[in-house]
Amino acid sequence: MSDLLFKLDPENPSSHIAKIESYLLLKKPKDALTHGYWIYHNIGDINPLLFIISQQQIMGHAPDSIIKSISNIAESRDNKYSKMFLSGVVYNQSGDERKAEYFLRKALLEKPNDSQATISLAQILNRTGDKEKALILLSNAVARKSNDVNLMRRYAEYLSNEDPLLAISEFEKLVI
Image 1 (tube, rainbow, N blue to C red):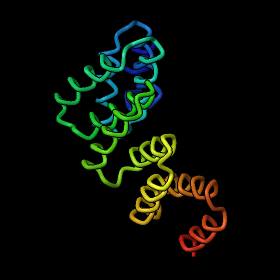
Image 2 (image 1 turned 120 degrees about the horizontal axis):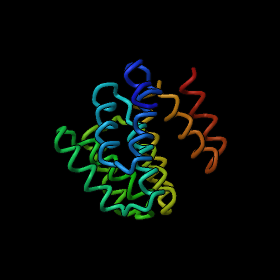
Image 3 (image 1 turned 90 degrees about the vertical axis):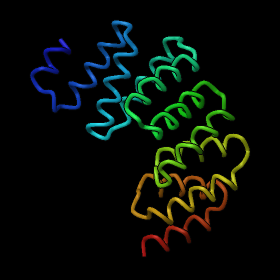
Image 4 (image 1 turned 45 degrees about the vertical axis):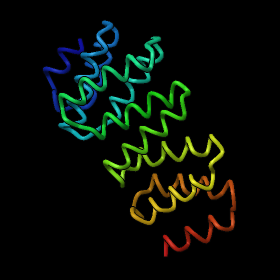
């Protein structure tokens, strides 16, 4: 059914998700990752890759085997950022915060203004007790990308937990 949907409407994002789900149901994670990378490189959406990774972990694949698959596909596409970012996500989801932080920092070296990597790294820093570093990271990111609503929302959440009055004053500056 997913093949038919994909053939009928290859431009529809739903047909791509159906194809990925089909690969996962057929226990073909490498095909799912390859298709996810195709979506990322041709459409610019990394979310299908994040979905595939979460499903692989649910299916019991070890983080290192997922990283190996990601590395092989990323190298064939010559995309260092996606390899670093996705590796950080895998290690974060598996609970290895040290490795997750390492890979997310490498991803941010490749794409310093990336919101997803910034937010993921801030979450790890916050969880490991480096709240001040998380706030500084988000503050700097918001200063560079003041029109990024997702970044602003995350920054507001962190500020409101630490200092509600500072949160209000920071966002008055952005809105005015």
